[in-house]
Image 1 (cartoon, one colour):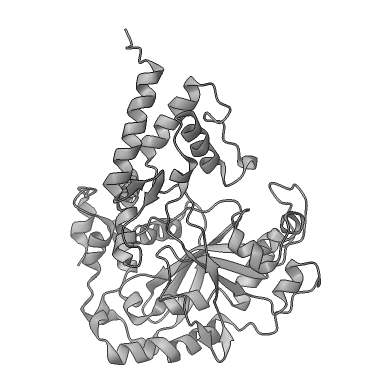
Image 2 (tube, one colour; image 1 turned 120 degrees about the vertical axis):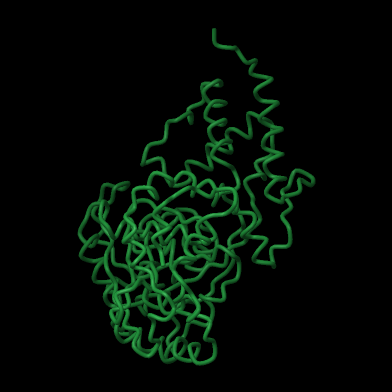
Length: 398
């Protein structure tokens, strides 16, 4: 016979579990607020994400087990790179392909778990044509509907945002993998967002499609890409200027709300809690309910538990950056112009050469640490002592 658990006992245990979990991440609970460790130290931010990263890797065990060892040949050893001959090219990633697996594997090397994005999505691998090795990745997805810092800078009200948000995408992941990251290729890849090819690919894919939520063909024109730094102020995204053209503009900081600090185990308990209370959010997610569904679900659960909604505030204020693709992007987004001015856009080849000359070549002369990198160290970027998995395929990496 299945044991019947009193709902009040379940709720009491869940409250204790939540508080214990927050403390295990490094938070203190002070006056109904979560107080994090010193967030000016980036390793403290990484530590707050550590359990989320560990769970992401554990959840990826089947994926990692099925990967062919040959996929690791796409990563470079340091001695395979010639900085003066780096030649970036982008490749679109499609679901169910080798490229899709490589993109996902590269994302697992990030210290902060990578979002899978939602809605419209464009994902890219960035290759070095000189040696056919992976430089890094970037991806664009639908932006958050509610983002105070963005909306205030643009000057949007709710109605204009609803009409014009279709012209904005969010780069939810952008960066270089080792050893190219040691050569500041993260800056190079960030600059590739603002190129003719990205605009052309977006136009071909989404320029004449009906929106999944609005069910209207708004004929979107990509005029702005937003990016937020997961570790607060970014050393990669700052001062991205080539030939006096700004490739990323720092705008403001987000308020520090989100849900990454609620574990999947707790989210499962919230499902059970909502089921017991016959709440409408119990496993009722549908695409049209929006990107903030998980936050609404957590807020409803906290309300039932009589815990403060302020627990949703993780306190990590991410710096928000704008990458304008059209010179008149603010006019487009405020209904003051209809035709985007793309006259300042360069090609990927042109942007790459400027970035190589400004950052990569100079770094290679001043810092030779990239030469010491061996791709066998990829395993150390993915696994910790907690989430280590027994995967024989890593043994083949030389």
